[in-house]
Amino acid sequence: MSIVIGVIVLGAAGGALFELIADSRYATRQGDAREQPIPFSHMHHVGSMGIDCRYCHTSVDNSDWAVIPPTKTCMNCHSQIWVGSSTLEPVRESYRTNQSIKWTKVYDLPDYVYFNHSIHVKKGVGCETCHGRIDQQALTWQEPSLQMRWCLDCHRNPAPNLRPADKITTMGYVPSEPQEVLGARLMKENHVQKLDTCWTCHR
Image (cartoon, rainbow, N blue to C red):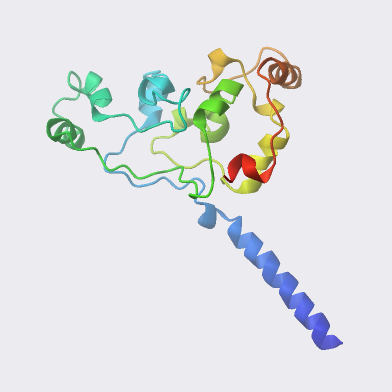
């Protein structure tokens, strides 16, 4: 009997330890800024310069992917400013050679997860909800865990994360009415459903 109890206790302890490790920032890489070929700063471009997310991520509201901007987008400004910066030489070389910069993916979902940026934007989920205060990130890191329970929390109760269409890219957004009132109204207006079936994300 004591052996059976010992096995159960060890199994429970092992399961708890596994969950603890799986939830750790070491495993999820939350807050871990990825090394990039160029130290691109959202804090500078979004925070200081006030550039809207959609200027660079042009397909975010009509495509599955937010897309990494082509080098030409960078050169719209950098053909005129910081033209001699050694840090930006890889950008100029990419533009000259028409070879894409090999950025490191920060939000890298498994292949078995289906995610569509445009539907989230159209339904009123702001950039900040998933990417955090990107305007305060000197180097880009993954804000949420991206674990399934994190996605499900929102899919089961989307109202707290909804905002008006003209505030989607606003950082530090504060609603002008109670969020529970706004969220409930936007759920009706945008036909937002509580989707938590397996095939919503696993197709």
